[in-house]
Length: 91
Image (cartoon, rainbow, N blue to C red; front, side, top):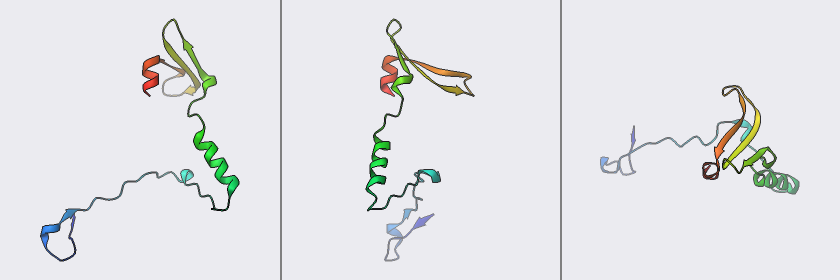
């Protein structure tokens, strides 16, 4: 599918690319009113929180690896992930 540049000539045609879908999950659509100072503070606190819990991490100095414990993963059938320290930092 192509679109024409105003003026009618084919010289300015270009493909029409649909806009990307950024997030289709409705629970990510947070709306906070401009006058809601408490709501803005809560949203900022949520955005600044650590994405991983430090309490669930253990460093094994002998192996040089990080062990991250979590809930049981049904597909992996385990509740932990072991990564070399350098690989963990890269993520």
